Amino acid sequence: MHDFKERFPFAADSLVFAAGAAMPLAFAPFGFWPLAILLPVILLWGWDGATSRRAALRGGLFGLGMFGFGIYWIYISLHDYGNAPAPFAALATFAVVAVMALYPAVAGWLLGRWGPPPGPHRWLLFVPALWTLLDWVRSWLFTGFPWLAPGYSQIDSPLGQLAPYLGVFGIGWTVMLSAGLLWTALNRNGWRSRLGWLGLLAALWFGAWGLGQTNWVEAAGSPLRVAVVQGNIGQDVKWEPGILDETLERYVQLSLPEHGHRDVIVWPETAIPAFYQDVLPFLDALGEKARQDKVDYVTGIPTGSWETSIFHNSVISVGRSLAFYNKRRLLPFGEYLPLRWFFLFFRNWVTIPMADFLPGGPVQPLLRAGDQPVGVSICFEAVFGSDIRLDLPEATWLINVSNDAWFKDSTAPHQHLQIARMRSLESGRYMARATNTGISAIIDDRGRVVAHGTQFRAEVVRGEVRPLRGLTPYVRFGDLPTVILVIGLLALSLFFARPYSKIMT
Image 1 (cartoon, helix red, strand yellow):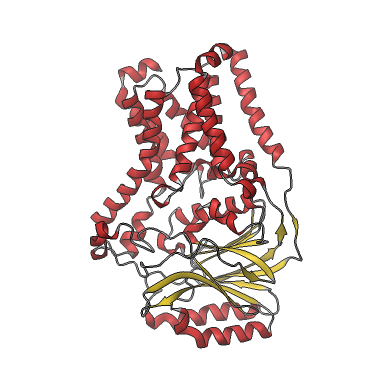
Image 2 (image 1 turned 135 degrees about the vertical axis):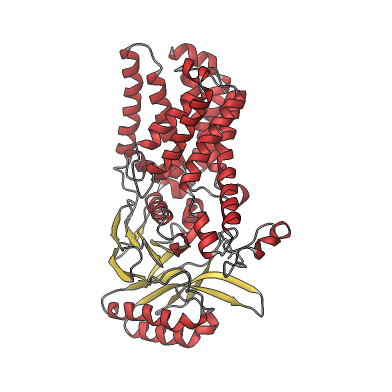
């Protein structure tokens, strides 16, 4: 295989790109999670013996394939709903993909330039730690975009059971460690040596499964009867003033039959496509009816005014209590324009409505729904486990509202649901997830979907949510243990590479 790479470098590059392009198959909606371990082995093969420049190229090609086929749906939101011309939307999408591909490219360059000599320490210490550290940096650098972090692919695998301990980035480290163990086994001479490394791989997986049997939470009250209303309002007409009455009527007609049978009714992000003060008569009437029937509504709605030029993407509770939550983590270009002085021309190409939101404060009082404190996140915020944990341990359950209509029938809504499932597993909390066109769902504290709706259908998803209290290790410590772990492993691989190599061989 080394001769093949030397004789046909372009073919080897193409194979690495193909491996990256197949990586999205490990994520929802496909769910072939073993590919997240198998396909990086091809990247490790491409990196083995490569110069720093070639390793950077192959890392970048792997990333271009992975993100090009994994987040292609950015084009849909820009072109189909943002009204951007096709060339501009394609260029902007490629720019995001290219930036994401820089992370594995940097990993390849650092491996070739500073990585330890070939051996188990290279593939088991250096590469998994470096990849995980860069994934973590990707979650916050330039506002952060940690989509398709490898850990998400393992929500249904034994490695996913590590979520309450180390979070999604810790799981990602074990994914790359598994790939390194498999690659090391393939490079051993003799079946006994190979079986030994495969035995370590099996021990890792059985250990993760065993840790998942621990329960970190306990009941904090009686189960809540929850209804999640999926309005299925087309994104192309959602913000037209003439459709407001029809939108409100649809949500009310779907919700009223739930009164007397449910404790909480959840509507999606901006389910009410008008400013709060412009629909006060409607909200007053809804609140009065809710109080009479002893039910709480939680709905997305924009707040603010043109007079003050202050706008928030918000969630309000209406019924037995009135409270507000303003979205903290805004979506670049979708909800605000970063580097406005540089990207001012963007407004001439894309007309996404409500693109001037301001972020809410980092610490906000929790909403109450069903007489329980609830942690609320809006759309993009579900990607950040470090933010979700800010509402814990006070929050006994979680609500996520979103509008995935921006992405039509792409893989994005499925990936988004998978991400939300990871938040429930990390935090040990039930979650009610309401989306405009799907996929609305109720998720238990183990990250399992216990009820879900059908995409592009106006319907109600019903189920029970168990309020829970307690702290998982991840909620207590966040990503810090994983970051310390991978930095320590990087240092160990660099400073003790040669002694380690002698011991292992």
